[in-house]
Image (cartoon, rainbow over all chains, first blue to last red; front, side, top):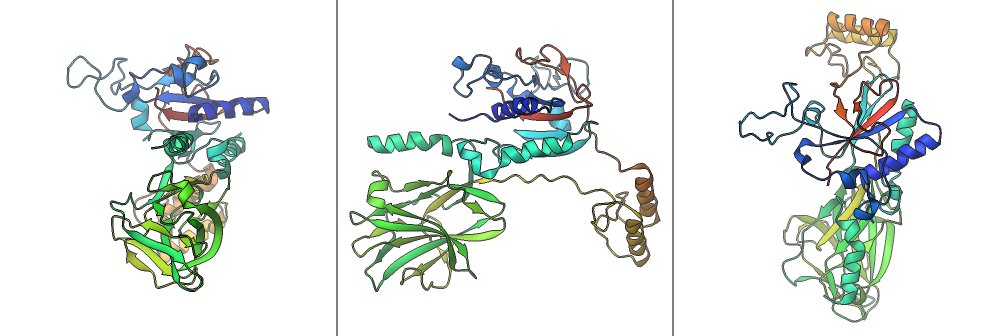
Length: 144
Length: 283
């Protein structure tokens, strides 16, 4: 079974916690363009009902929205009564590409980013030889 | 498609269907014409395709568009380093009976995920097919486009013809990128010694006086190197480099199994901790 990247990050988070690195947070942000997609298999709250996960995930999962004017209501510039089909605020402001992973240090300073589409973090089978999982984990520990 | 082919496709579908990185492809061939791979001990032909690797990677799979003429059709598939624009040192090789591997298709697959075959960035590599014995004959189908570099050998690779651009043997190659963190260079570290100090000021001052273009010397980003950059560098040494801050946001955690469920979270909430943010696609 394919190991979903968010699932790999969930495993890494739990591993870090078990090793004493408790002051690390990893969160997932769903793109506004995917707001209608069912998120339950992303957080894997029902493993038996999802083909791409095998265990409940504990990482926070939030939904990005498109609210440029900050009024708490989705932007509707074309006035059709539906949210505009566009990117959400954080995806725009942070210049995100799907499957980007952003690192901030303890002061909230931007450190770096990588795209997990290209850099498979899965430490089993398909991505084992790359060492990407350990490289990402080592980077987190170096910021700790 | 026979049962073995279906089973093989099911087995490799996770590999080829999940954003694997296709690092080289000629596309599938349009016809049945191709190179005749054979060798009778003194004459014959081997063929090698050249491909380029832009980043450090691990080889995952090869899809070689070929079929057997004889049965069996024993071949050696060789991954080779480049040697002055010819196939060079062998990196890895596979022994294949192509009559057994194609399962009625016009290609066969070699999965390499467990082999940890590393490919170095900015290098050419070669993929070669030899016939193993005088009874084995193989067709390596031509690529559709005549834009690919390849070479041929009549002596099982002891000598290679001058590399030609044309219709090579049709081939696809998948590999996985190796991540190497790219953390922005230290602002003000003009001499690249990993520290920002008086030595950088001296170097920057010299560049400002001489008018030389010094990489990293335009501290204030105004397009020129002058006294203002020296002042900026002094400020960095005295007060520290400015850190890049991304915009703040707060969204509600909707994962019931998270410790933060139903709470508003964002970078500010996690200040004091190392925090990572994954931008995904639900569904």
